[in-house]
Amino acid sequence: MLSICIMFADGRFGYLERVRYGLGYVTTPVYWVADIPTRISFWIDDVFVSRSDLLVENERLREDLLVAQRELQLLESLASENSRLLDLREATQVIAREVMPAEIINVSPDPYSKRILINKGSEDGVFLGQALLDAKGLMGQVDEVLPFSAWVLLITDSHHITPVEVNRNGERALARGSRSTVSELELEFVTQTQDMKAGDLLVSSGMGQVYPKNYPVAEVTSVYSDPGQDFTTVKARPLAQLASTRHVMLVFASEERVLPEFDLEPGEETLPEAQPVKPVFDESQVSQIDPSTSNQ
Image (tube, rainbow, N blue to C red; front, side, top):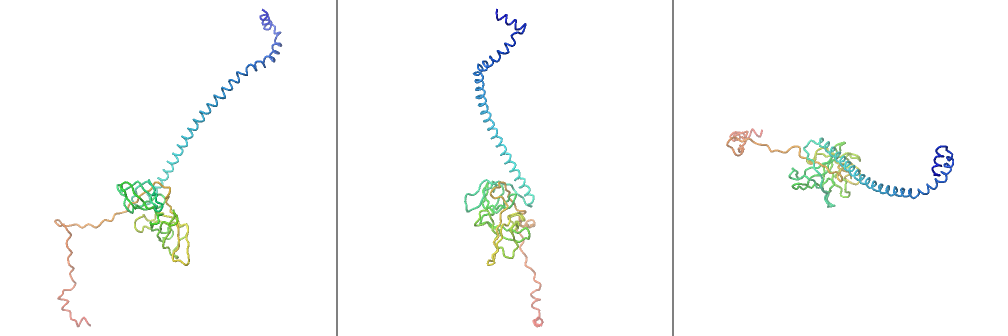
């Protein structure tokens, strides 16, 4: 009954408002202390749930990052391959011969022989001595043919000789693979009077009709002349990407040598025999010449 009376008086007259306001200072700390266990429980739950969620999210992001990096590497590889193929296509337009694209599939493990294996063989028309190029320059020539592949001897091999000429002035020389350096060429039999200097572009001379004429071969890196020697020491750097390229092209001869054909008469199986040449003078005419007149 007392509680009802107090509630009625508080709602009707407002006498207890100040008392209620003062009691708020007393009861608030009590409420705060009583709520501490609940808030701690919620905080712990939030911490552990957030940590587990973060770990899961972090793992998912790591996987997405790996996938994205793999896709980026694939795109870069495809872009690089596309660029090399475009360069190779542009190089084929410079050569006035039939070419066939090929791919390097292996490298010789022999340290004394610089050879590579390509994925084209005799079944594709490959033949011994055929020239191999990339988009930058000459690479070598076929020295062993298999049915579906072929070995190519690189121009940096010490047993390979390439006829070259200086693009600037037409000075001719022979480029051989260096015996002392892995990826270098040496020009043989260059006389002291020949005009060559560092930076000169060496192109194929077309001698021997193995390589297409005027295709880039190397760049002269050093020229050393010893007054006591007959020949100048000239070294050059190959322009072909021998150690990194993958896409190459085989060059076919511009034209085939065809023997002349003879038309046979109907019924003839062999060529007619050669007829003796009629002498200018008859023997009777020769015998009638007066010796005395011939001595005059």
